[in-house]
Length: 381
Image 1 (cartoon, rainbow, N blue to C red):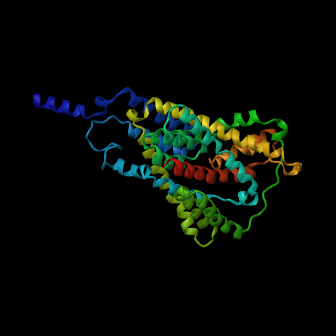
Image 2 (image 1 turned 90 degrees about the vertical axis):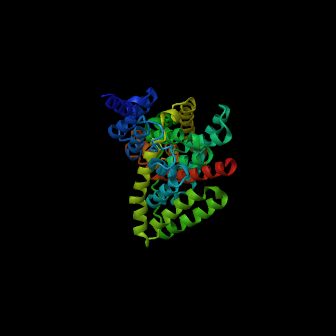
Image 3 (image 1 turned 90 degrees about the horizontal axis):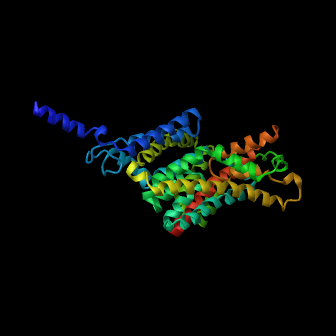
């Protein structure tokens, strides 16, 4: 009988109930919350469902030494996590983004690329704020990239500059990407008046296939020569777009924009979520990172809107003025921030469709965040 009790006691020691701490329950609850809002609100469900379930996986209490945890060398989760830790997954995500992105709006209105550049002020503003809060320069750079509203870029840069903060930075970036409509709308309304919101813009001109083929080649050469350290992201982004626009690699483009990006999204979401183990995630630094991430997002949105207002001061022709409501789209949350421009614009004038114009700074923001990451990596790496 004693042997049976000893066996049961040993079994109990290996269960999650015996090893559970309140921090594990908090993180599991956060994971369930992510899944809930993704399903009920449909806020970035392709990202928040994998991340939320990954949080649950990573916070199941376990007996140490079982070699199944994400931070235990040789475990299955640890092997999958190497794609995040070593920065393999983000370039593959960018390949898929390039293969599904239409840069026609930007090609037809190149002046709008400046809005995408202006919105990157959120990155550098948050960098300075993080420094003021005592973060090391490399940590501050990784935190600042949250302002670009680009999860893969945030993971790529934090894996190089601040691996210990990567879980908090990645979850923060993806959380604010999901909250784009909630965060950006009040800022846009606060910084614009009714007259500005009523500005109508002409539809972008038709872009030829030759222009669409030339753009990724010229775009890559230009950005890569300026910021060689951004090559992994920029190279895959423009390569994916060339696959789409060349007209002769449809199968490759479909694979990159379909099965490949779907598989990598699952892996990156689950492993990033699983990396938020309570003992590593529930810290004062994580809370501060979430706060700084929100500030960087606010700064990025405000910078884009205010920059458009500044440009309009120098445009005499009313027909060429830019609606400041597309300034928010300078962040790289494609196409959600452009949709916010459309929705807020139509609230003021139901016949005013800003979506196609907003897509220009939106895709410029994707390029801009990758360039900004390259700059930070070059200086701080």
